[in-house]
Length: 559
Image (cartoon, rainbow, N blue to C red; front, side):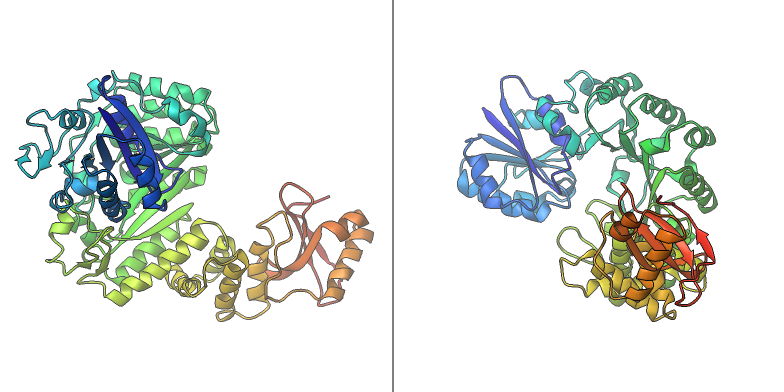
């Protein structure tokens, strides 16, 4: 028998760990191939690729991000291979199998499939979690014994993955299940937390000492659910090369003081990226979604981690019950003030199988009928208000998270506390949404400038934007449509640098940019040297256009 395990990943950089677990648990007598594609691949082309292998059975892994493409793919596979058996699993069909069975597949496997998939392949009776047209398992969600999984070959270090280790994420799980009952999350359906042994985890980490892995994404729903165990794993990580970065989901307000102090005082901050699911700061909202959260402790822990330099990614969800636009704006502004490395503003997705989806009618939630089931309006948010939040999300991602224009926006808001970050980001999001794609970085900065010049006078608006823009690249960037010193002024400044300040004349004329900038709350002249690995800048204070320099502020002296 020949079996093909396959899926559509969101991007090439991602890997499907579920399929790798099924692959390493395969019976030795079954010929098995694992093939991964991405959602942008041509479905006919990859169908032809699989058909050329002439498999007897295809196992598909289905998630919210690939559900609609997978439905189309199944039809193509059935046309190319009329006799092929198709088994599917994953979060998307687990909680709503009937639409998938109507596609003519053999069965849906609900839950963890390391044992059950192969039992279904061999057509064994009474397979846990299996549902087909003539059989429904009384076990609605199969779970695998983790101690047994530890006896299998490692799914993390397969030979097929070795050539691409440096270019793809390594997904690692040290536990399964979640102790919390958040109404919007599928993990709440599996609230019995099971742990892989610490010795097994240690063995899986050892190859990282010699392989070129850069990013490890730990799939645990809550890394710090057992503080002592989390500390032990963190100490293992500290033994690895510093270039290996680990991403964890943590609950910040329950992070124990010993674990927090370890990250503050002993851990190398370059090794970690923490995802902190805040979702809302509204107590009534949190109670409605069965989420306990100490906001004061959350802010304290987040500040300490951010101050330490650990990359912190904070999440908000718009569309939760009892959170109207004003409440969401308060939640957004509260997290924005923490200055996290990333702030994600997502729209609630009503996932099948969650308590939230079952209460949608009660809360007057209208949402997309197809994946990803994003909310379009609620009893507290109109459709127009949801669209406003989407603009905030766009600007937050493109400017705040990606760091392009972030510095001038954050500095502007710090010096103008009367302006709501939410309101400014919404305005910027509206502007970005009007740009034709793909747009250049120059276009993004000019939209920031257009927004700022409607709020503050020139040349301050130009100076603020130019300050950020001039430092984004070692090469001289394209000229913005903002105010700049004229050619005579620029020539005079270069002459002063070369003569009075003893800079090498050739370097001054070949390797510098001269522009307006914003420094110490006033408009100044910035001179950027571009002949080093990173741009270097000095600040000059001038009297009008006379190039009478009465102060030199050398932040990054480029001599």
